[in-house]
Image (cartoon, rainbow, N blue to C red; front, top):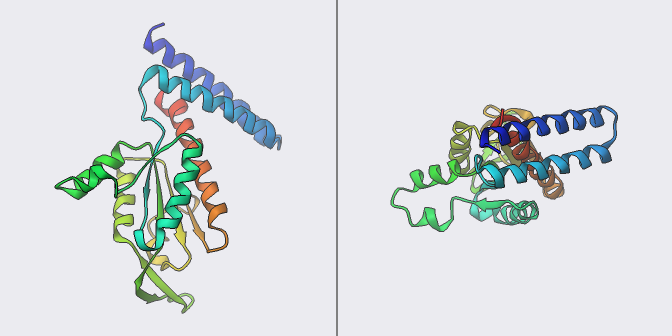
Length: 211
């Protein structure tokens, strides 16, 4: 079978399963919807192996080392459960590079999805005009890397510690792609973001990459 025919076949099967998944969602059948999604995920993985036309399942995780490493470690574990390779701005390829920014750009461009975790730089404290409560500055590198990921049109999710000043995220990101978390609900919030990016990865391949 020619590659063009395989692309058409995978695309048609993907659209059919997507229609079935939407119908199951409208019926309120979560179990059926999840079963159909797993079939689409398998089809997507098969297409990746057959066509080599789309990035492998990878995620670039952007985070602040001092306050965000535990959050990153939990995210790595969850993504690996889905078979995703994790990239960060602290990988050896970046550390060895003479031009750090260019190396990070290449690292992000080679990724299929992006997760940004905004945690406080506790060396700086601001005041929120809305609440008067202490707020903090996030790592400028996370904001820089998020902008790079958006420029490359990667599927993005942004998780924001509630202690970060709202001006650093409310004015620059759509609410549906962003979730604010506290110390008590980070794991649940992270799980939702990981699931969304995994789903978007497979949707993007079947529906965007092959049409």
